[in-house]
Image (cartoon, rainbow, N blue to C red; front, side, top):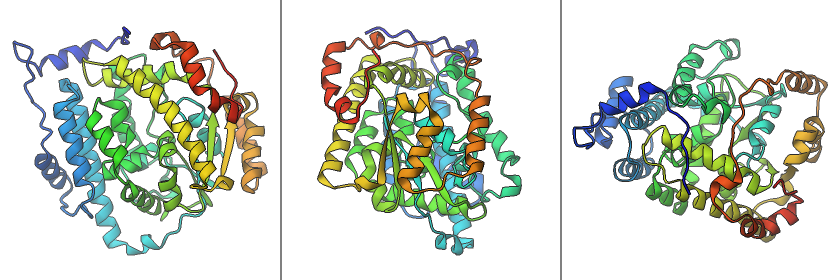
Length: 414
């Protein structure tokens, strides 16, 4: 299936040309060598203790995949190097802070709300709604990228790290001007736990943005409990000076790791939005292809489609199997239909709170109504995509997902 990539800004081609020789060979101007990146992170921070060494194997696998599989442009190499080095620098600062403040380990994470489900099924919208509850603490992008010193209430909305993270993340808008129609990203917006899990170098962030099949295989076949342990460690750090009643977290990637999530947070309360997989398949594949197009001139769209089609079916089938087998606490999971969420967001959130026996306060209700009234939906550019773009057979895909739709009462949108 031919995929037509969205136009990149003209400067991207000029920059990438610097990374090519006369014969088109890569010049390797940006090093992705493990020892060099570790050394650079230490030099940038003046620190040298990364904590436990568990992250080193996935780091090695990731860097090898960058070199051997991702076919990166010069800009792609720059982004990859910047991402990895920033994560390592943040980790060095986290470890340094925790050694100086051992009391942070005494922080407790009580009954977090965790939103997970298929990508593009309403998880971001629901997380945005939960962020309006004054009792909920949601992780903002800036504090996950630059975590030390821990955020404080008085400067939470004005911290200079907001601008720093915003400059970095908004680069994607500069590379592909159409990207804002696909995804809202900003330093001062809530974001996914993939930015926390990245600190053990095991995150779907890299799988979405780069063609790194060996890294995807590694993360799929190893116990990621150490990554979730570090996830909890970072939440304790972030709340140490800015605490609320509970965390409200979000990441579609939690869906296939629910046993590990519940092992880390036994009292977690999980919300799973459900939507027609065929409706979101075109959107998600286009988003992932675009993310990779920012970093490489070679995007295997057919491979992305095949992986997404398989992954959607596997994840939802696995969710049902885990629940039926009692491998995860079914009483701590609330299912939400996307159709209901968009039709009546406040009623849907009330249903979630009632199921979890959480007080739905007047302040939350007021904030929700104000937020919904102010959402600039009509002003936002439209993300154009279609299931037909995937090249998949509609009838075959519909039959494959029929048991899932029947179980969760998910209406077809195509």
